[in-house]
Length: 229
Image (cartoon, rainbow, N blue to C red; front, side, top):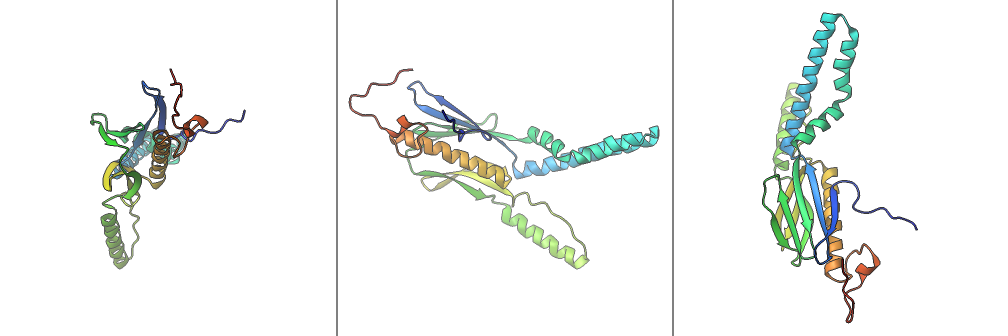
């Protein structure tokens, strides 16, 4: 039989379970960088690479060994992305979200409390550009105008302009779940949350939404034999 790829593979981590009544549930766990933490990661990465490079230069001079320059200077520069990814893992924030057919709950950070919402009320998931994005853009444009008057060019990394809030809109009210640096990462999280919500909607409304298997398309009928685990 042909096997289809699960829509819940890959990132963010998604676990499918069943509760005591055999009802499907989803738990989505994300690990993301906020724009402030992304700035810190870039700074720490640059300092670490500079430190290793200086050590390499000193060792090369003292030992008269050009290979020290190659490995301790060229290596960190070539492996910049790997080093940044390794450092970023230590700065990521964890968010856990839980879906049932009637509730959506979120827990932010390691010591945060669970916050629950009734899924039966009008709701949707959305991306909202970070609140500080316009201010950062204005600061960058102002800096560029100053650079032009002085005849220089300076690159300014857009942290907040490349960051988004993954938001849960509940009866028209905005509830930010997390701040995510990187549009690609934010879109992946949004797509996964929407997929989980659609499946829960299918289960809650007896066939409406997106079923994962044929039996999800049918509601309970008179005389049905209840399923047992």
